[in-house]
Structure formats: structure tokens, C-alpha cells
Image 1: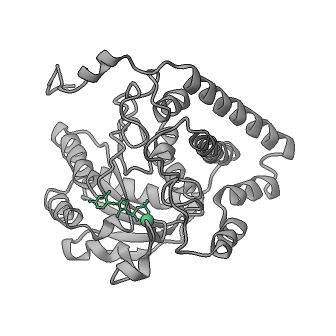
Image 2: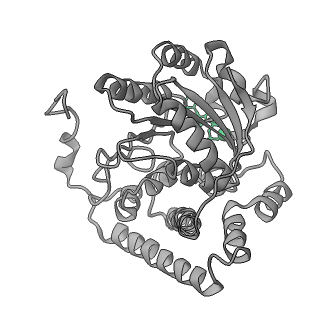
Length: 336
Ligand SMILES: Cc1ncc(C[n+]2csc(CCOP(=O)(O)OP(=O)(O)O)c2C)c(N)n1
Ligand SMILES: [Mg+2]
């Protein structure tokens, strides 16, 4: 059983690097806009921003193929955008409008896309972990080689259901990648105050599940680790754990004053470790893009994000009758 700290890096093309830059910046700008709309009172309820963690989901999506599944927690907007869901539909859901992915009835934490194989969006800490194993079970049962990316946090990694899931996933050799997004805090609690051992990636050892720790501020390292994990799962060898070390710049949710850490700590991460700046540097120093190319990417992203905000403001609120729809499934087909 391998438990190691990863330092592999893939060879990537200029196009791939530019795509990572684009996708990470789209998430960041989209979330900044969501933060603004929240401040203006246009988004109600919970809103957990992913800013700072963009390299995790973008690196792993680069290792995915059509038909792979993904499921995550409430900090989910980045995952939706990275797997190709429509920014308009995500933003309109945030503002509670009919044009949103759940017709405005789900909000930030409850969006889904069967087309993109995105299974939420879960507000209960750790609840998505057994669901991720269930998705992997379905693929194994059907006999394809798809994998399930099951994301959860460092805090969720202390939940009992995670270990029940590890047991079943190992026993049945399910193609599930357990992605622990270790952003160092669970709400206001630092990892050292809640977690008995710092190396969460070793937690599968008792079940024979290999794990590795990855620098989550380096999209290339994440992509390389994702490739390893995916190859393991597609080969029928069972589950794999990736502990991706990352950092969130904003509060736990929009209502968090973040008194449990210093401004200097956040500033230092932003200045020294920012994942988007890292790719920007790689693109410029490697002459894979010019300043003008990057400006053009920034401009196109701004247009997408502004359009999504406009769409989200203009889309009507759901009609009252929608209270009674989408409660029970009409079609419980086993073959879909
Ligand atoms: C079962 C359950 N317990 C407690 C909560 C309250 N809660 C919401 S988020 C959170 C912290 C989770 O931290 P982590 O797993 O590290 O994820 P992060 O927010 O850092 O992405 C807690 C305790 C909850 N939603 N569900
Ligand atoms: Mg956390």
C-alpha cells in the first residue's frame, strides 16, 4: 500500500496551460461577482466562496474524461464551472431565479447537472462521501471505466461516515477518488485544533487505500496526481485518496468575519502561493502567451461573468406553483 507525498509534474502544452488559466480565472471572477451580488442583497441564504482553491478542481477536471462523476460539499460553484456547467444557470440559481439550475429553489448549495455528471452541492458535512461511492458503484456495476471524484474538506475527513465509505469502497474496489480539499480550516477551527494527525492522506491505510498529498496551489501538480489516481481507478484497483493542500482566501461563508486567523496569514498566501499568478508566470516566462493574450482572456471572462449577473438579475423568481414541483421523481428508470 503506497502512502506518499507527490511531487510529479506533467508536461503540458501551451494550450493546456492557457485553458487552466482561463478556467481558474473564470471561477475567481465569477465568485467575486457572486460576493458582490450577495453584498447587494441579491443572493439570500448561504454562500460559500471557493476563491483561493481554484487549482484543485481545475487540475482534477483536466484528468477527467466524459462520463466521470463529481460530487462535492456546499463550496461548490467552482466545481460546477470547471465541469462545464453554464455560468448563467449557476448565477441565476444563486439569486433564486427560475433560470437557475434548480429553478431558483435550491440556491448555492443545491445544484445538479445530469448532463455534466455533477451530483451536487451538499450542505451536510460529509454527506456527499457515501454518495460518491454510490456513483462509483453504479459505474462498476455497469461495467464501464468511469471514476467518481468525491470532494470533501479537512473537517469532513473527521466524520464517521467517511470511514464507513472507505471500508465499502475498498472492499468492493470501487472506482472512487476521495479528494480531500485541505484548506486548513473547518469553519473557524484550524486543522491542528481538530485533527489528531496532520497527514490526512494516510487515513486510508487501515483499509489498504493508497493516498498522496499534493500541493493544491500548483495546478500542474494537481493534474499529475489526478492522472495517477484516475489510472489506478480505471484499472480496477479500487479507491484512491488525494489530500490536496489548499487555502481559502475568503471567510467560511459570506457571514464569517474570520477572526480565527490574521490578515497577514491570508495576505502571505495570496502573495506567495496564488495558483492563478503561478500559471500566469509560467505562461509569460515560458513564452506560451503574451500580456496581450492574457488580457484578451481576462476580457472574455469578464464578459461571461457580467452576462451571467445580468441573466441572474433579469430572470424572474419562480412562480408559487413551483413549490409543488420537483419533489418526487416521476421516472425511476434503472437504465438512464
Ligand atoms: C453534519 C454537519 N455538522 C456540522 C455542520 C456545520 N458545518 C458546516 S461547514 C463545517 C466545516 C467543514 O469544514 P471542511 O470540511 O474543512 O470544509 P470547508 O468548509 O473548509 O470547505 C461545519 C462544521 C454541517 N453542515 N453538517
Ligand atoms: Mg476545510
